[in-house]
Image (cartoon, rainbow, N blue to C red; front, side, top):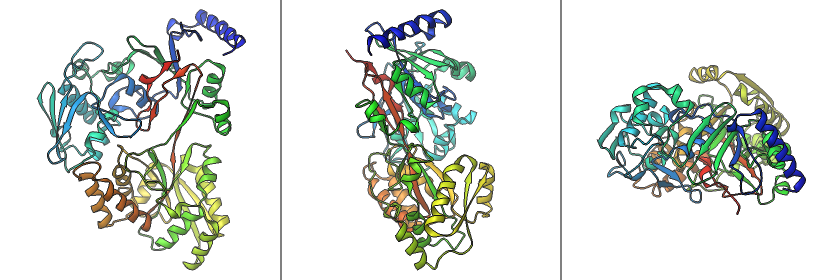
Length: 500
């Protein structure tokens, strides 16, 4: 920061002192700077079992210590609040906590802190309930949770799941203090959550969340949903880290923030799925449509550089076990697509693309590509989410429809399982058995091979054609170091620090 910029920043800071409360103060530059600042969209909630967005996950990763965390290098789980998570059959799991854990209010972190919080998630129907019932499949819900002693509890699942320990880093599985569990005053808890992690929440409001850590810099997460404002604030020295980059600055990001930017591969994917009840969509037609879509052009156009073109069914942020380049038919090849359509007998009538209203812009872009490449009539059809589900359940859908999926934990099987559960009507015993084998394998590593075989079979049949996965962008100021990210938490606030 040059002297002019620093002087301007100090003047602005002085004015802010006159009009803002102390919690909003920020003095830039120099060793006396009291805190680091991060721009992000405002979180929907900070109640851990109800966290549903990237900002909530980022803050939760700093305020709570879950049973496991994720290694940013390998993507695998690392024991955190748990000393061990073991099972003789991958179905009945014993969780032992590290001794001495405390919440920020001084109360102990016990086995009941976890089982009580999970029971609350189920009882209140929070966002994380699906993780317990549909992903982990805890037997009978709360009935599958048994406290053995203060530091030990048992979790019984409906079927073997080798990835269960990796799942436990999700906010749905975080603990809550006994006093909060007794009071059930979730509104008050959401305003000032009490966690067991490295940071405590000093203040939380619509404009910012202030996180304090003994012996370290305070981190302020500012509510800045506009990517352009975040980016500009880092350029001006008014913000330390931006968690979003506007589309029109993507190409210049490397020049403007050389060595100070990052693209984080995602774990969520978007697909076009085919209704199995419509015999017109043979594998040849599915492959044809896939080759006709220029994924990169749409990502760099209407999607504003926020996606990575798919080359597999497992998104790039899902490690370990993910392989690049598995989907040959995902490569854009308009000549091959046109020839393949002719070989398949052509297409008569209108091809309808069904989607929810929020996907309208990019679906129209896909439709236009298909019109030009294959010279067929393609028409998008937009419905509300509930209307689309009803149309699928009643098998009224007569064309490809949009499916969004997210891997719940870092394993290929976690990315593939939701595809079998999409409303395509697709059934294949071989693929289902392979995914079951992957989930119930003796170890996560042993589950990689059956998951890869399942992925190959799915790409051959292509009941869903992968389009792209979302990714995240980060840029940061020259005074910051330790910017570390991983797909299941996002930015690791506890690793941020200032350069010496």
